[in-house]
Amino acid sequence: MDWLRRSFVSARLSIRMQRFEVAAATLLMLALSGGAVLVTGRLSSVGVSERCLERWIGGGGPFSAGTCLDSMQQWAAINEDEAGKVMAAMFVLPFVAGLLLGVPLVGRELEARTAAVAWALAGSRRRWLTGRMVPILLLTVGIAAIAAMASSLLEGARSGNGLWVSAFNDASLFGPPVVAHALAGLGLGMFAGALLGRTLPALIVGAVLAVLVANASIGVRWRSVPDSNVIQETPSAQLDPAYDFRWVTADGQMLSRDEALATVPPTTVDIVGWLNEHYRPLYLGPSETTAVQWQQSEVAAYLLGSGVLLLATFALVDRRRPT
Image (cartoon, rainbow, N blue to C red; front, side):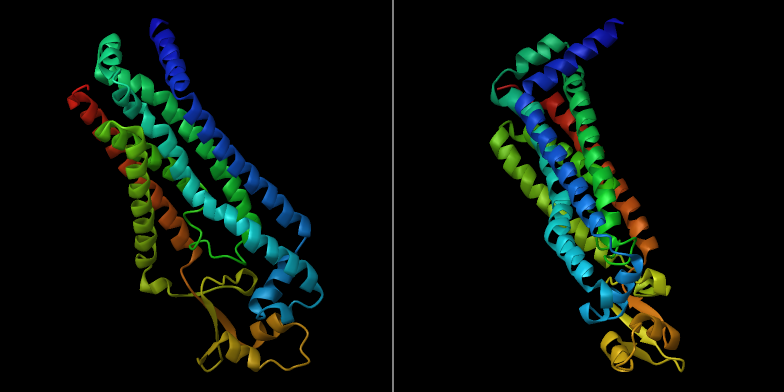
């Protein structure tokens, strides 16, 4: 019970000392989550059917939408103008929230020259850092998990169950990677704060490192696509415009989307149905299975990196000379 009481006091003190950062990071992620839920509702309220999406995508654009044209234009506008921006924020803001929470955790004590007193009162530098870190770590996971669930809802709505946007292209923007990015930001912030001992320089350095890490992960993701996934066969009900379509004739000739559309009789009403009847659809781009595998790999890599940064922070604190 005494251990539980000390843990509670330590957690309350940790959050109280970072109340501004805690409030800012929490509001930031909750606002992002609320935006994702709001846009999800707006997309769903349009009431675009899967059949309309198939005609729009597989048929080559607005001219093939038929009676779905008005609703598809409204759905596409929301998808591009609102959902696209929210999903882009899902990649950036978790890093920001993690940095806000991580940088002052050690850096503020060093900057205020109160570290020596805090360490002496705790009886151990490691005990002090553990007590300060655990509640912030749990808070980071909690607010990022809410955003991860909201982003998954939005991805499902904006992709039309995989018909509109490539899951591989959005692999880092929804679900578990959102939590992994927040933890990476936390680890970078804690390490930079412990290394530099100044909150503002540590925040800048942490932000630069986060940008480098994020860009590197995107580059690795696209370079990791195996050649076997460059062309994937897909059923007509699950057309995925990751890059572009190809249509294969009965004699094995591969036609581009425009070449295939040029062969459709002008009076054809169901363009997608005609194409599926006469050709075999293929698309250029990674498969959905590849997207899931990459998500798992990315999350594992970020968690491993975050763990290394947290351990490195403990090592820095152990060796750090108070100023």
